[in-house]
Length: 194
Image (cartoon, rainbow, N blue to C red; front, side, top):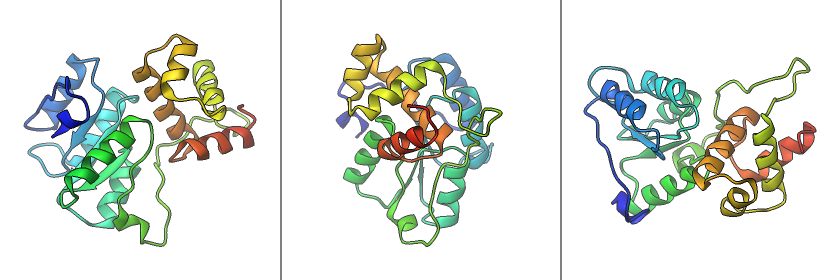
């Protein structure tokens, strides 16, 4: 099914989080981790944090049988960039994975109906002034996003791969505590970053 996103995709499977972490350490070219919360060994929420520590630029999506808003919020708070209930249609799953791979956050409808707003809760990097701090490259990527440029155009202009641009955009979202490109640009302008 994931081959519908990329026909040449290679899917690696792990029996538990420890094996998954070992695969991530061995394969620097991975684009995404899709993780179940319930697996042998390490707790799924802890696993999300461990993947984030090992490879902060690698997006993690949770695919879970739980439709609990609490579980979804906790997964996003641990650093997951998407939470997909297993009851979701195949089209929803593919759309969510594409969305996350393009640097956005996927929030399931079960959370959109709740009163509180969901945002990734990883602590944003801050300068001593209290403003978010971006690297020089992240600032250049954010500037290009603000100009309405696509990931492909940004990659060409900056001499990067599209995958690297996606990683920078994901990192920018986490640092600015936003969930999409429009919010990132707004936050960047409000903080004098672009």
